[in-house]
Image 1 (cartoon, helix red, strand yellow):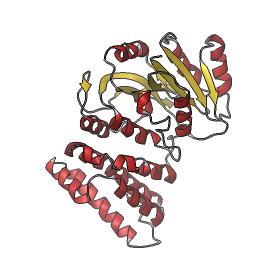
Image 2 (spheres, helix red, strand yellow; image 1 turned 45 degrees about the horizontal axis):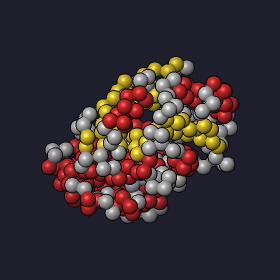
Image 3 (cartoon, helix red, strand yellow; image 1 turned 135 degrees about the vertical axis):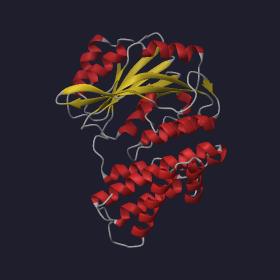
Image 4 (cartoon, helix red, strand yellow; image 1 turned 30 degrees about the horizontal axis):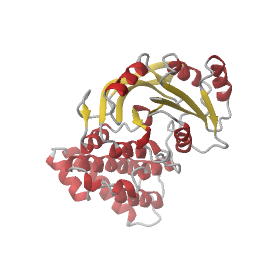
Length: 337
């Protein structure tokens, strides 16, 4: 079995039939399998999947015993998968025609550990679905060739900041015992993407759109809240990730540090805008310090060397605001951003 297409579902009744059609219309059952795992949906998701299964009995459906979140559902799918490679597709998205045929050929001939693909963005407006971004790039680096340098893979992903599970097709062996996805918080895909990049011995960036990603208010990230912000700050706060910093070159460490610094800046702006308490900032600061491979001074020097003066000034200003707020227990920063 060459490829497993893995589809986690949760209250996706409006979209899942289109998602499945986009996959099943191009499925080669002789070399691949399609698995759905439902995470305790309360709408008509299961009924929609069962209607599709009536026409495609090889489609496999599993159900979580209780709602456990996207990380746990993806891990459950990994435990059931048999393919050499796995391709996650979210139930509210669709796969472009012809993608799976090209992907199977690429996996058979080039056989990289990791395939990186682009996507488009669909949004719902006034009851209509419109394309808001026709082609979103997920990797900054060489395209359509084999990449064997880990630093190049990591730096390219960090620069693009598009760390989604559905834009990365990976050897199943890269997932550690089916538990690559953290199950405690959202943004588990950020953690997963970097773990895959660090584990891959080779990668190939196709520069092609594989997925039409649908943005809508009911999605997990449709609306931000303090818990999700803290989840983003925790997404790279893992010992196994810190242990690999020494293996990366200076450029990869810089782009890693810039990625987490941007997350911190956005969290500071969010805290000031929503007048959150000092505890929120203190948690963000703690997670930032554990997640960055560079000291503030080293990152500032990296900005200066690259001529990124605006980023340098913004980083310095937000760090000053953070330090000042943390010196004043019990007070929230002002509403101005």
